[in-house]
Image (cartoon, rainbow, N blue to C red; front, side, top):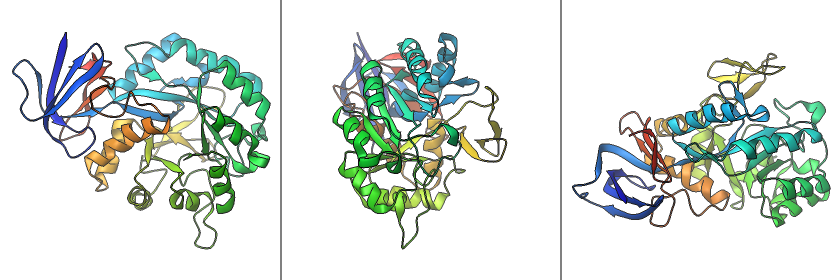
Length: 364
C-alpha cells in the first residue's frame, strides 16, 4: 500500500509544493508540484525529514542513566511529538563500572518501532579535561583505550566525546575513529594546535561549540577557533538562546555549512543532585549551567528566528546529524530513505504530525 503526503516540501531546501510517496516504510518518490487526488493533503504544512538529536541526556523526569521501559516510552513519545525520530542517548561522566548497566538499559528499551529510535549511545565523558562544566570533576580521568575497546565491543556506542588533554598520544581517539565511532572533542581547554592534532587522529566533531571549552581569543583561538577554521571538524550547537548568544550562533552557522543542532536536554528534579529548571535552562544548585530544556523543533524555530532560512535550519536538525554518524537512511526526503517525516506548521514551526518508517505516530 502506498501512502502519499502532500504539502510544502523542505527536503531540506527552499520549501515548495510537492508530495512524498511512501511504501513499506520507505520513501519511494518525491515529486515537486501538484499532488494526486488520493494524497493526504496537509495544506501549507512543511514536510521535512525527521530530526536527529546527537546529544540528549534525558527529558522531563527521565534521565537516560536510569532508564526503564516506561521511562523510554514517555520520552520516546515526547521526542516524536517534537519532530525527533532518531537520537543518540547520552551518558555523562560516571564511574567506569557504571556504564555497562546503563548502556544495556538503553539497548534493551530504545528499539520500539513507534518511538524515536536510538542510533547508539553518546558517551560524554568521563575522559574529559580542563572545562568540566556540570560534570563531576572527581569522576574525570585519562582516557582508557582498553576500557573503551571493550565497551565498543560490548555495546552500541555511536559517539564518544573526549578532551585531547585527557588522551595522551591521542591513542583512544585513533582507536575509536578506526573502529567507526564518531570522536567528538569537548569539555576541553585544548589549544588550537592540540585540537588540530586530534582531527589528524580522526576526531570529526566538536561537542556543543562555545560551551565546555576555553574562549575564542584572537591570539589563542583554542578549540573553538580550531572548530571554526578546520573543515574536518563539525560543530554541534545548543540553540536554546541561553547556552550561546544569538550573535555567536549566527557566526558559526554562517561560517560553516556543516553545523548540527543538538538539544543537550537533561532531566530536572530527579536523582541525588537534582538539576533546577529556571531561566530557560537547567542548572546545578551552585549556578553552573548544566544542560537545556530544549526540543528539536524549538531549536529549529530559534535559529529561524535569528534570520536563518528554514531549509538551512532543517538541514542542521536532520541532514547534517545523519551525515555525522554516517546514516544514509535518514536526513533527507528522497527516494530510498526511511519515511521518517515531520509536518511542521508553516506559521509556528511546531510539529503537527510525525511519521516513523511510514507509520503515523503523532498527529495526522
